Length: 336
Image (cartoon, rainbow, N blue to C red; front, top):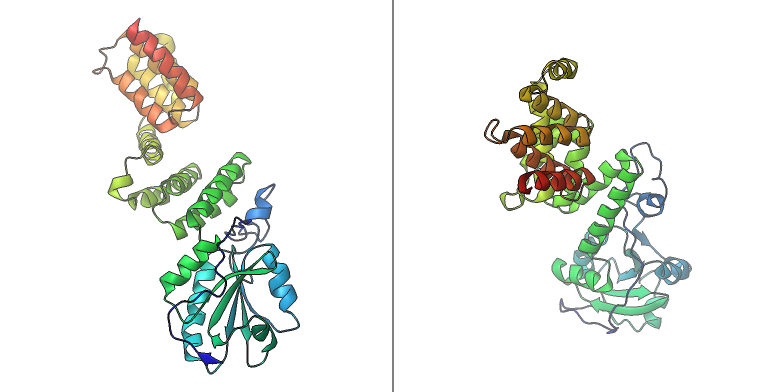
């Protein structure tokens, strides 16, 4: 066999069909797999055995059987082949980028010529993709990195957008289950792949903020590009951080309650108490107090209670139950 020029050729021209994608974003810091459905998807390390050497004896297990789980690329190479040495590192890099959706198996044809002969390979490097136990596509020659990436994407292993969406859904599930460590790790892994992903930035910043790491949350938000800085998810966590800073200056809620008991028209006390209630997660009570000010005196501080309530809506999210309820009540007050 002799080395081939760099133009890609496909000995197997069939297009790729759908297949099961597995996203692997690493083990948890404690070494344990995730809980529930997350364990199957995110429990394995991203540095799993994605690249390995095979022999004639192990080819069936390494390639034929494994390709029933995800596509397997077989790199037929030889130590004397210069283009093989160029292609090898590129293949490995692209396979690792695919995060376990495809695997790479390398076969030295000098030591194990039988399989290459059976497949009719007459020049190297040659890469053949197997899926469901069958060769489905391939190329020959040391093609550029971009073409290798496109080849893997064609197989389905380079669908980064789909993988990120699945990861974000898993992070949301982890948060619902109370597994904030797993959620933080998934968000971090997504940002390693797509550093300006708004949902991952906002999710991680929110978890950092809720853990008392406000400085880290602010630093993360500071890196958001200008064209994404005003997106709702980013604006919401920025608003939460800003309100938390305001609350630090307000004072003792018990004292504010005493002031209100003595004078229900003490709008400043009611406003400050609403700020503290919001910081404590008592959204309905915070909304009640601001709505009470709006009802009693729209002109107080240039309609300041309504303006603050709108900031709450932005921080809570437009579909939050507290937002929906308070918005309905605000509309009744304004348009009755």
